[in-house]
Length: 423
Ligand code: GDP
Image (cartoon, rainbow, N blue to C red; front, side, top):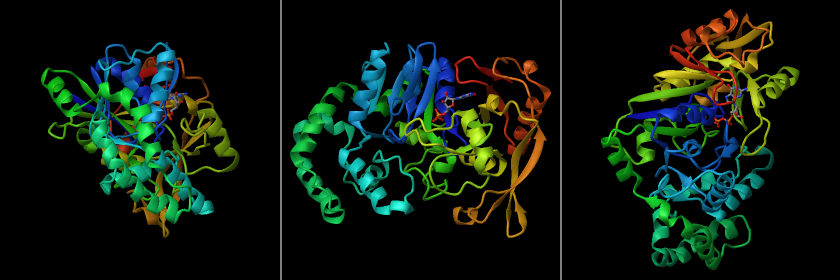
């Protein structure tokens, strides 16, 4: 069985937390796109963990984690992440971690390129996480990247390095005027951080197909949300890969398999990190209150996130892009303590109300149309059953369900593993 767990909004919906919870029913958890620009926060009985590259399933004994061919992997960052988890007593071995030979290696010069470009853009910058993600995906499609499988044949890999370095310096040294990349540094980097990973590298497609045939349950874990998908998101304020569910089987290494189910993770309000159109945005005191209640600061970067009320227009679009079969609604507890809550139910464009998410350029001219609903004044973080929720909270859930035309199955009311309600 193949299930994908994906974000409906702009990312930071609490995917890591839901994957950690739902992974109890899975044998394998696979990340299928993106790199260490992700920051999944997971809190469970073993502690608090921030995962950037490793699938969130790594925190569960008995779950095998796969890093698929759709990923870009910063091998130095991965070494650090593995070391930190091991210090906390998490077991990581080739038995429970398999890295695709086809995944691309994010190079230090990609990170440098990312920083140089943000510097060049100055006040016109995009708000890149500066982890080299856009440059490394660009290299991949230019067919100038290194792949994980190459680390297994260091002699051959070393032969490719000088040509790539020469080409990369056309940008780094000649265009940006930065210090040139050196062949010997690149080779030393591969030897230091790549060589120890070779025992984890394999054809993850073969592994996953065999596991699927044997009846294992496989979860595909997305990074970021639908609105950051390179094709369907708010381009150019997107990530550099496809994060939507339909790409999952491709990015995992099993393009031959079909998804059985897609669970969409949707936040009870909106948050968005970095630049780009964000129609329902709150400002000033209202924003500050919601931001601090929700702890909306980036896990990977610490940047304060932009926040706003739940956006039906964007979420409905996210659900459509993901083909979500059911929803896990997260962070409902954050909305406690308000007499009234606002929901963005439509956008106003040129004096007209629209309810379908428009093309990115048009978004800049859209104004939010808010509807007020009744809030609840009590703490709901201890609720574990539907019946324990105040009527207003249940009404809020039902309203979102109806407006978004998708069944809400789980409601998360806290960051801890057991703080959720199954409806
Ligand atoms: P992800 O990238 O989608 O995994 O999301 P992040 O990890 O960046 O952000 C989610 C944050 O909210 C994390 O700090 C979680 O521990 C926390 N979180 C997740 N679900 C809930 C919830 O239902 N209630 C509260 N209060 N916090 C939550």
